[in-house]
Length: 51
Image (cartoon, rainbow, N blue to C red; front, side, top):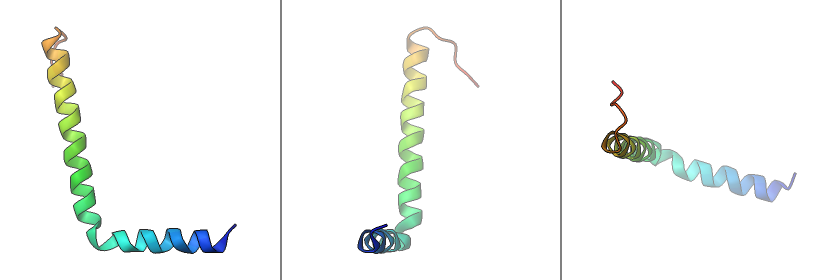
């Protein structure tokens, strides 16, 4: 394994840690929006809504 590459990856991940909750919230909001949009699309196409 290339140690310089591994150290670079660790440094990158460590740099993201202070904002981890922000990235998590952004991901969950984006995921929810995508699923909600697909749900509306399928309902509009005639599929029954899922509860």
